[in-house]
Amino acid sequence: MLARLLQRLLILGLMLLGVSLIAFLVPFVSGGDPVRTILMSRVRDLAVDPAAVEAMRVHLGLDRPLPVQYGTWLWQALQGDLGYSFTSGRPVASEIGRALGVSVTLALTALGIAAAVAIPLGTLAATRPGGTVDSATTLMIQTFVATPEYWLAPMGILVFALYLGWLPSAGWTSWSSLVLPAMVLSLRPMAYFTQVTRATMMDVLQAPYITAARSRGLSMRQTVMRHGLRNGSLPVVTFFALWLAGLLGGSVVIEVIFAIPGMGRLLYEAVVNRDVPMLQGGFVSIVALSILINTIADILYVALNPAVRSGHAH
Amino acid sequence: MRIDNASQAAAAGSLLHVPPRRTAARRLWRFLRGRHWTFRTGIVILVALVVTLILAPWIVPHDPAVQNLIARLSPPSAEHWLGTDHLGRDLLSRLLVGGRFTVTIAMITVILSFAIGTLIGVVAGRVVGGLFDEITMRVVDVLISIPDVVVAIFLVAIFGPGYLTLIASLTVIGWTPFARLARGLTLAINSQGYIQAAEVLGCSRSFIVLRHVIPNIIRPIAAVSFLRFGHKLITVGALSFLGLGVQPPAADWALMLADAQPYVERLPILMIAPGLAIFVAALSVTWIGHGLEIESRDGGSGDE
Image (cartoon, rainbow over all chains, first blue to last red; front, side, top):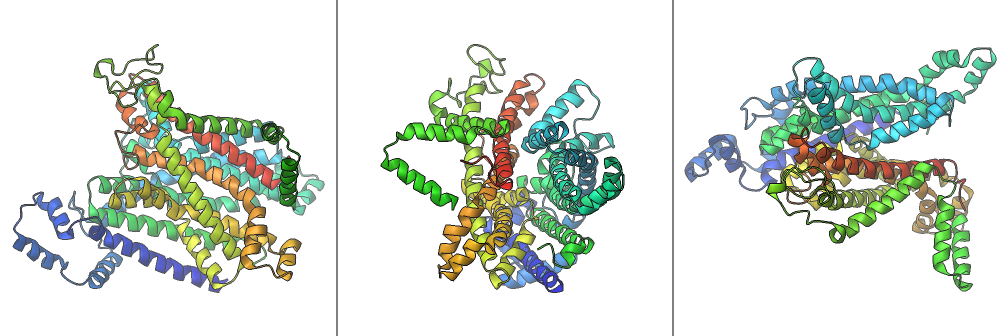
């Protein structure tokens, strides 16, 4: 187990190194001279004196060999210095920090809604497989999975903001601006959480200790409450973490539609404005966070589950 | 074993000169009969959709690209069944051709992910515990957690939008669930009698993989392919919606959605119609995938 964990960490480290290398190379592969790219965004005029360009190149350290530049860049990135945004001129790291807070709030709200609906619903569906509730739940899962959020979100704005006027159509000002995006964002995870809860609960309810509890005279309801839920909610924990990682950068469309200043929109705007340091920083931090959260979730899953820990489940 | 019977039956059928069309129709009927209604509906919708998208250039009532600024934002009429958009282009015509890019990109991505993932997963499962298995599976563990939209946005930013960029960026992450699933399924049948028999008989590794392992694990993987297909349709659409996928002059459902945003209050159908198209397309493949999943889980009870 420990060996596997070490292996995992080794690959994780190598992977992050690879990702950082790819991000570092962006200005060199995206066409043109990186110095001119930087100059264009700062000076907005390409008719600069070649001598000045060369002076800038030396100043930025871009005249040194690539591996040295990469080493310097990586060392600075590890210390939290991701450079300055071409568009706003502010440090990339602090912009990312702010955006991350917004995205985490949004993601946690959406996942909270998803779990609050999914766990009871999945459990209910599992207690009577093939029943009306189960069939309706399955249909609901399929519908939610197939609904594009970039369709639902504008429709939601149309109904709740423009027609009814209950909620703001966009922005990030008060708790009410969180409602609509979080609801739209919660549907897909809700579908998957319900599916996982249902499948796990079906397995759990077949276990001998459930039969034992039932034969002791506990009602189905009590059995599920006391024994089922505790054992059935473990995979949901893993899924929760997976989705948290996915939503940190994966909610781009929702953040763009609702004008929410989160990680997804930061990345999107970096692309639109050709803001290279922001793109590099955003990409590396989203990927690094996704990988880290996922690794922690996997370790937790193993730590919490005795069957996997001792290797019986594989 | 079932596969042998099927191929023998097919061979016998060709010897007896059974009219192939009737057999195909009957086999299709037998295949569909007894399946869940969602599965049947899904197949009907998907077939209709693919046929429509292929024939679209010949059946559109108007040229989807021709603008008519005088008749812009006109409501549904006899001339324009679904009305016109903000540039006076016929909505129905744009809807009919608008799925071609998204569906093609999603389909190629899924097929590539399926092929790469299954191959890697099966090989890892056959040499379980070996260096190849350890390395690929740890790589899968890490890659699987990266959101594919983020990778796609990043690569589009560098290389610009296009078929190749989109397909490559979605496949880089897309193969990992297939690899994990294929490996798990391979592990489950490694200890089966027919695999051990083949090993004892001295069959080559590639023969065992191609003849025994892959045919026996293909069903659950096919089910997952359809589910991933639905997911990819929506992801490709998301990129087009952001302006990073299919580029403007072309008609595309998600792009139409994005364009319709400022006019949604005036003419809601501009947004409802393309959204519904993506939804129905994604739902049909999800239904098919779910139907296949149930079947492979129940051991193909409804089989011939």
